[in-house]
Length: 338
Image 1: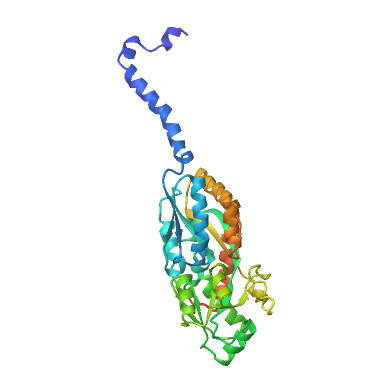
Image 2 (image 1 turned 135 degrees about the vertical axis):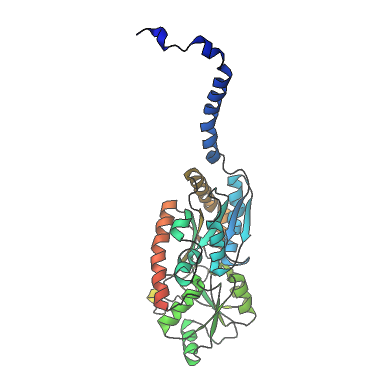
């Protein structure tokens, strides 16, 4: 074959050097720019959406995490409280957000795995509409009473409820929350009738208890430390397998004979579905660094919360298991979708 036949005609080359140079530059710049969108994350503020009102358990937990996380991300971390629907409103907001890592949900047992079974309508599918990023903490629940109530432990509460069926009220952070469902499970296990009073978050529920609107509350330990110490509420029982280190004198429901009420809540960070993996990995790594920071660890441990990180896959597996567990619990407790 004549090698000259493989060469382009000289006349054609004279008319196209500028166009060819432009095309080559465009091709060379396109690939790096596409990858840079992931590696450059974040370029602006990241929003942590809290599914309950300010002053609640997740809010208390999220603020020290957010302060340290923004140092690792190099961008502001904004705490955005979106209460309502037992956490479902915040869940739906995040599920519908752009999958770019800038809008994240500080999720918990209630909005992610209980609400789909306990509420009549939820605007998201937990396993389809969220990207798992990492666990951040675990903690048991705490049952407290107004100091005017003549009870010292869970056996006293059960005896009082049996003498006054349907009159002993307990507040929760909203219908379908772990607080609500734990009270329902206790009532089912003990054969008593408790009056559930839902509020839009743990903060409002606590205010109702302090004001005497309700007699009992199922809450998170980190919202109650100062109130228990000051005597404004009385700690009755915790729901973990073992006693809480910050409430060593308070017995557990398991100790009282209710082994099925070993309930440990968990908290995590998730985002909308389809967040690119490089962004997920960056967020996961910086959350791990955040949870390992002494100031964050001490803040959480001092409130009775264990800082715990995980891989995205471990969190996804936990969410899947917990959906099954809590759906069964909703059915067992006889909780009807509201």
